[in-house]
Length: 134
Image (cartoon, rainbow, N blue to C red):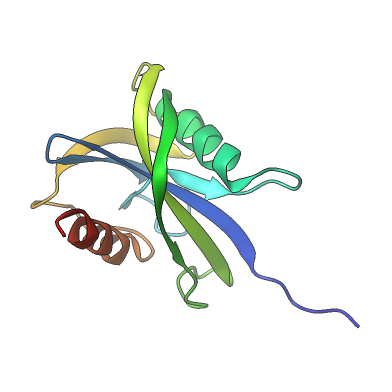
């Protein structure tokens, strides 16, 4: 018997002072909206390696994981189909900030003044901030 399976993605949260790192999406869905850097986990890749790879590919920044920030699995969170995202808090350890891969821009935004965001990234950021302030 065959079962439909959701795709797995990762998203990285990089906060510097009171600013969060976001990328402007180059491709649909949500083209030209801002989002957390991240993407699909490749076959035989860990989610930890995937988030570090995706953030580097999109932003040019080398990061390390600080901690798991949450798992988001609403079947309607991505119009391409059911995706489950594992979100990590990251720390920058090197690299040069430069938009690459699926990102047309990369920029820090103040946590109190976020742009319109793709997917459920506003909800993810709000929940992470709420947990950080506890």
